[in-house]
Each structure stands twice: as structure tokens, then as C-alpha cells.
Image (cartoon, rainbow, N blue to C red; front, top):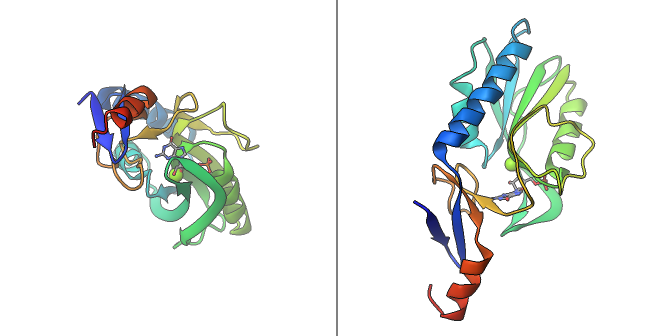
Length: 191
Ligand code: 5GP
Ligand code: MG
């Protein structure tokens, strides 16, 4: 599929499933190398957007590890609200654990700065960050993203777990907002 329409917005193909799989291979290879000797690290998935990346990444991890999830939300529509809500808190203690955070996309960095505090307050021994997508142009955080799969411009993305108002998460490729096509369709009143 080259184009998708979600509500009032048009999106065009940006990264194919195969390109994503190759990038996930690279991230997994780096993590497998870095954590070879570590004690049962904990992979913390940030729901909801990271679920596909998380599943694909975990299939490639070759050392004993534990998994858990937290659900944070900061976005409404296509922009951040600036405030991070904890919809589902930590269900496991992180005290003394080596934690690898698995995020879908790091934009302004508000979400991971908040998460970093939660993990530090919880007594994590070490914290590293993996993210499917990173927008360096928007990023204002002070935390290093250790394992980014892709660095992208400041565009709005859907697919492979990421949504536009809850639609598009099931798409296996990644799509970017097509402003021109969205405007064109608005002009001729197609839904
Ligand atoms: P931040 O707190 O870094 O500004 O934003 C992080 C969160 O905002 C992500 O985990 C994701 O849920 C959402 N987000 C940021 N950029 C995009 C985007 O381009 N597309 C979608 N669907 N969500 C985004
Ligand atoms: Mg996220």
C-alpha cells in the first residue's frame, strides 16, 4: 500500500516493513553485544505505540531477560500536549535492575525525561533507551538515546504501532503525513 487515508488525513509510504526489519536487526545486534554479560535485564515497553517494535526486537534478543510494560500518553491528534499521563504504572520493581526502555518514537523528549525520573526514583541500576524513531530536530531532552533504529525529520508518522487518533497502528509499514494530498482532498471535499 502506497497511500492511506485515516479520518481527514492522507499519509504516504515512508519506511517499508523490510527496511524496518533490517533496522531492528541492527538494534538487536547492538543490544545483544552490550548486554552479553549482564544479569537478566528488564525490557520495559512503553505502550501503546511500541508494541510492534517491542515484539520484533524481543524475538532477536539472545540472552535471558524479563519483560514489562508501562503506559504513558502525551499526544492528542498530531501534536504533543506537553503533559505526560501515566495510564498504567510500573507493574514490576526496577530496584537494582538493568532496564532497557523500548519506545516507539522520541519527539520532544518529554515522555522519556518523565520516564527516566520514574525509573531513577524506582532505584534502577542502569537505564538505556531504544527507540524505533527519533526526531533529533525536535528533541529537547538531556538523555542519550542509546539505540535509535531511525532518525527522521519532524514529520508526523503512523503505522507499525503508531497511531493517528488510534487509527493506523496495525499498518505493517510506516507512513508520513502527506500535507499536499490532505489539502487537495479537503478542497474537493472527499472523505
Ligand atoms: P515526546 O514526549 O518525546 O514529545 O513524544 C513522545 C510520544 O509522542 C511518542 O511516544 C508517541 O506516542 C507520540 N508521538 C511523537 N511523535 C509522533 C508521531 O510522529 N506520530 C505518532 N503517531 N505519535 C508520535
Ligand atoms: Mg511512545
